[in-house]
Image (tube, one colour):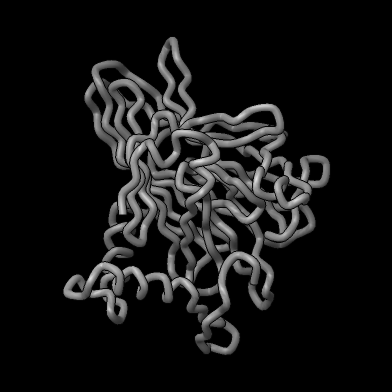
Length: 304
């Protein structure tokens, strides 16, 4: 399925369609089609905690920006109580074929972004394909980190993290927990931040339901990827819980996930498109319990 700018011409249009990925052990990722988080259940990695039914938000978003000597163009779509920030104005195409893919154009810079959840692990892989124009630019990738139950919201005064940096790897330790959030990028340099927060992300769907709707996210730092004129780069950013991943090839992860989806029962290309999509949708609801080693089908995300 492919969607163009008419699907997100207004913020209200952009909220009407969502995508969902699951990792087979109860974790998930979801946002609206335009990339915005419109409820507390939107984010790029909700981890399934070992031995518990709880899901914890670890990665809310990656704030992408294209930076030149004279311009800073943000691709992130988000809301505050006062304003909607519409990074989707640079979004030219959204594709869904079991994997969400966004295509952006910022002047002469073209960028494609795909997201995959690693099956059987609390890990998200975000792959960027970047194609630069005739001027040098930088791409800034800023992870917005959290650590809270997916049913609740949190604020900076109640969140405390310790961070360690090792090359391009960032280790974030929530205060009072033995968990470690690993962040790693295969390209660029790391700019460290100390006690930096993304304040007041607002969730309009929660507000419509009469629920608290604003929260903060932690910024440990960001990655700077430099692009020379006409340079192309494949950039992969991974976030995982308690298990560091080796340097990951995001393009290969996307190919493997497409192959896995195509191998599902009734998902062969020989079958009608509706049947293939139905097979993929059912697979999203299959959870393999790591404690009992048994598979079950849950009623649906994100409320279970």
